[in-house]
Image (tube, rainbow over all chains, first blue to last red; front, top):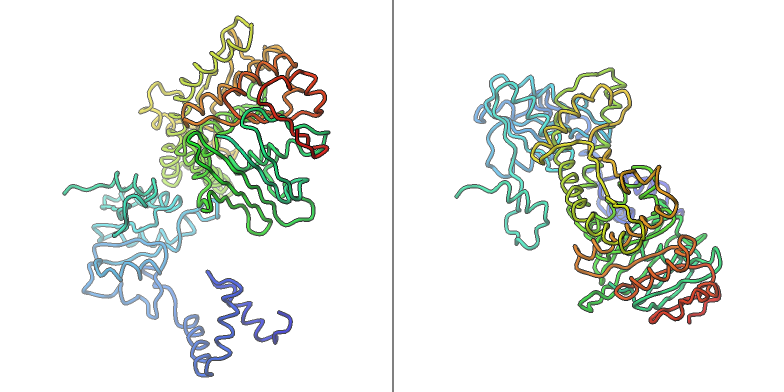
Length: 197
Length: 372
């Protein structure tokens, strides 16, 4: 390592901090940039700066956006009586890709996780409660994890107390999977959540 | 289950050592500090993926090394081989590989090699703290039922999350039992109920086996009972969750101050009743020992019944524990059906007891590195 010029070392060091990037991959990325054309590197640098300067959170739904309120919150073609609650902005992207949801979103910014020091005050829950006035249904699209389950139950209690319908997305088998490869927990959930035909 | 071969690399005091075992009785002999118990510890690792001597895995690494490896070649009732390899390294942690395939979860492995251990620490079932007694049942049920083990882990994680919330609320001066606690508790009691149900079922079945062994081993004419006194008393299991939730709510203020959840199966009590009294304060030394031995064998029998596979017995320093006559009776008794590993300080002393007369016994002298 010490034989590398300092600027390359710094670049590798910074890449290695990215999620899912190990030391080796960080080195490959750095060397890729060394070989790449100057314009490409500049474009990357600019994109990074733009993301930090121009992107902020929508004051209504807490999703990332360049304008406030975000295009989804202001879109008149969307159903404004239904909100889908997700953990992170990436989850909005995932659900949008399905093309099957035309309501609004609300990004919590995480899940309740006492062991990681995250309590109700640390999430964007008040923001959600303030939006409930003309809402008919809240869909909880929260990951089926330990903390996710607690969060979903907690939110459902708060929302139900205002006489609004609360649903949670189904848990069970992924499409195209063979039963024998599913783990016991998933199969148990799938059995519990079976539907009438 | 039978352990045919064992190989230890950089484990405890062994830098590289290979053992072959007998399918019945194996005496592991050697002077103090020669590494007898380490052999049992290695087998314990292969079965339960952890030590019975320490919670810190790195303590088991040979001085100055970065990792240890344990290889075990097992044979089950159907004569199918099971090659288990457990690696632990300071940097990458623990990995268990069975017949070349890595186990993805610890819970998938526990129970594959059913074992029962008698060690100076495991005797606390009769005279130890409640937590030591609970770990006796947890260890058996976790080996017997994967679902119990998974539930227990989940329950513990949820419990520590609740305790952390208590501490956070106390710091912030919040003192209302709110929707956040309600949500945590509703999920917590689901796991509590599963643990409770398993433990009660275990009590019923285990008692019959335990009482039978107690009668065989002792001349004590008193009756004996392994009794679980659940923290939440509910005459039927449907009511359990409701009772538990109510108590969690009632004790909330108290829990807030202590920062600990005082309701649930983590406070189930275990008592061994001899005659009419709790053995802990009232039992004699001899009664304690006989009871402990009967418990250990009942544990083995119970596991065998559930797993439909002979268990391996690990008896650490049995001779320091019981007199020779009792030892011989016991070893003879189990050695016919099960593989047994017994550590003893001195091989001569062991033979003096007349164990060499036992058929199918093998003496492994670690101190001099010879195998008889």
